[in-house]
Length: 215
Image 1 (cartoon, helix red, strand yellow):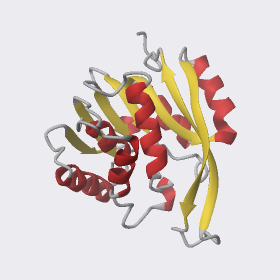
Image 2 (cartoon, helix red, strand yellow):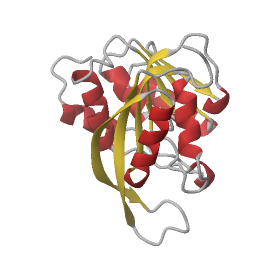
Image 3 (spheres, rainbow, N blue to C red):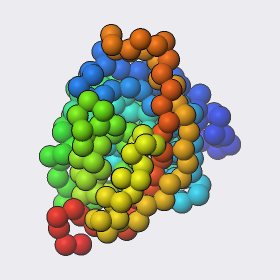
Image 4 (cartoon, rainbow, N blue to C red):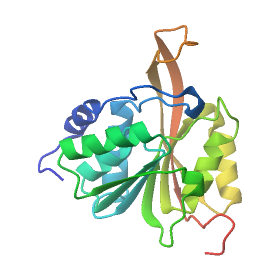
C-alpha cells in the first residue's frame, strides 16, 4: 500500500479506471461508482483487516475496480474473474498501468463454473442485480461461497432482506455494512433518464461453508 494514501486518493485512482467499452445488457454491466468502491474496500481493509496480505478474488470483476482497489491497499494476491473477455482485457491493461501486474491475475471464465481446490480469503463483487434474469445475483453469491471464506457483495436494497435470509439458510453470517444511493449513467438504449438512482446495500458474508459441500 502506498504510504499516506487517503480514501479520497484511492477514489481518484478508481475514477481513472474506465468503464465498459460496449456494456452488455444481458450481463447487467455497469461500472461501480468510485465512491462506492473506495468506501467498500476501505471498510474491508481498516475495519475488518480483510485486505492487506490477503488473497482476494474479484468475482464478476468487470473492468477491475474492486480488485484493483484491493491490490492498491496491499492485498497479497488478486484474481479477477469475468465472463466478458473485453472487460478482462481492460482490467489487465489497468493493472499494468497502475504497476500491479505482479499482484494481479485475470481469468475469463463463468464464475458459476469456476472451481478451486483452495478457497481465497476474501471475495469482492458487484454481481448482476437480477433485474434482467431473476436469481442471477444469488447464482453469483452461491458461486462465491465456494470460492472464498468471506464475501463483500453489492445488491439492490430492495432485495437485501431476501438475500440475508438466503445466506443464513446456508449457514452464513451477514452484516449490512452500509446503504447508499448511487447514480448510474444512461448506457443502454432503453434508458430514458440521463442518470438513474439506485439504492444499494453492501453486505459482508462470513462463516461461509461451501454450498452443497461439507466444510
